[in-house]
Length: 145
Image (tube, rainbow, N blue to C red):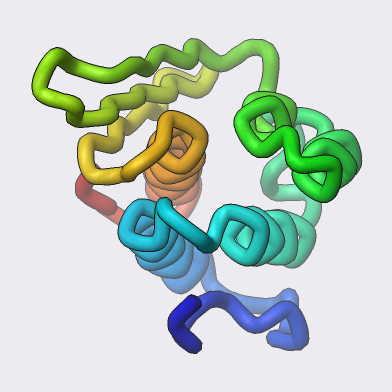
């Protein structure tokens, strides 16, 4: 995994714009590393969510359960546990083999992924982009999906 993933030791006091940009960067990293970096990518996502603290209330499912499922090897279940039950989640594989996913949060902030190699990584990337849009609605980030 490249070294530009979020560092869990970073301060939890950062601007919403920075967080939105970090979410987008992490979504791209997760998509590009679909083949072998599921666990490190999900760990980086969990660290980022923990740093975001209370701002994610209502937009994050059961992060502890997601972490346990990931360590047990149930990556797709871990990702779905991380996404809140109030969100709409879709995804699949097209006839040409392309993996697509879309996540829409209850706030209507939503995004998609079309570049990941697995459905779990596509859901995770789409979820991160949706969180980035949510962050942009609350802060100053106008992230693109």
